[in-house]
Image 1: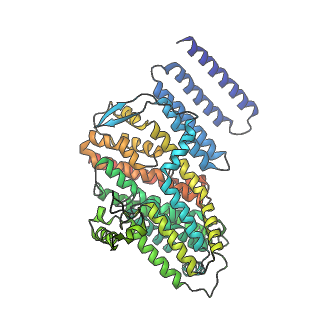
Image 2: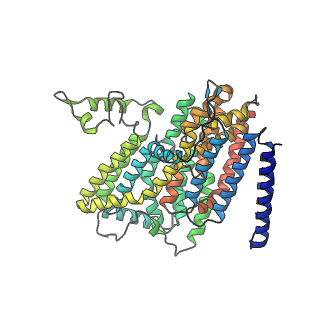
Image 3: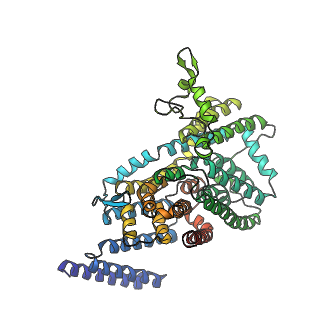
Length: 552
């Protein structure tokens, strides 16, 4: 050992002795647990100091992961407020730490290319925020429009009566209603081309569930939770599946039977736990968490008419479904593309009237099918919500000042979910600027010749933890594995796509999760306590499925 290593060892031992003395003398509770944590950390630091030259990456990873687990444990057990924000910050720091440990690189035709170190530092953090806003721009605009839309709806007498009447009709049928809504949202998630587009239905359903005297966790599980489980077994839909197929040169039909199996098993298992929870909730007759609904309905006029609002919302829902189901890409239905081209080509003289009115989001020189049904982006949904909010305001005779006030209130209530979305993308940006996942993947597989589904599962889990975008995971990691193990394409496909949904159930980098928890003001720890048995159960089922697909 060098003199510097000896000095470092002495410092580590002295600091550990001091910390141990303080724990014994000053700590009043959990002394044994704290001492065990100190011993493990000291042992890691001693090994790191001795072995850092020969095994720098391994020892550095062990230290970073241990510290991350330690601080994560402290956040979950000791912290009372902002657990989700703290966990996101911790993941950002871990991602930055990995850029100091691993060189960055890419795979090219299955061969790993190392480009050296690219450490991220303090001045990169503002850059993370800037690029996070850039990457999440369409999500931010969509969420702002969603808040504005529902703030206007919540002031509509017809909408208020619709929510309360459905809630009163379903009284005594809470479990059946929850099961039906869960299934509908999972099916919609599996067919719509944009996952966040499903959120258009969620505030309406949350208001109904809370008016039925169910708790926030149930409302979250039935709505946001069902969307997450739908992502776990995405059959046709979701931009995550689209971009994964695009970068790995696979199709929506790849491993579709296995995804369907995961979908069915996920629905049954998830709703088994949900039903057990609802039965406990129904015993508490005085439960009322309506005040936690950001767009709660108040002061319902019994004489208000529902049907004008119902008709308008039915048209709105039909347009959403038409716009976000990939008719041509998934099912080969071209009628909507042909209709779109015909509509955009209509002229008054030499003036293309509809193309001008709908703007460049409808069609441009590079893509004439922009805006065609089945090709909608989140911007199209945002536009539609704005138009229908105006129609609802006109229908309900809402004055301009009240309309603007509703927009302000709705936008304000979506700022916290947006902040969490930006935080999730900050983790992705750190991994984007200095891609360490290809390096980690190369380290895992460079000495492995035979296909190992468990190593692939580990790589998929870690990748999805840091990448809020499955397409980026496909581009940096999954595509190379498919080139290397060409006979196991279906297994790799199902591993990465299902584990993306699996990670989404628990990770602070899951967009739907952080939006939902912040929307309903649910503590991250409360959700983990609710979902952990399902998470372990579905993980065991997935690993069994991967094993059968590989070895049977």
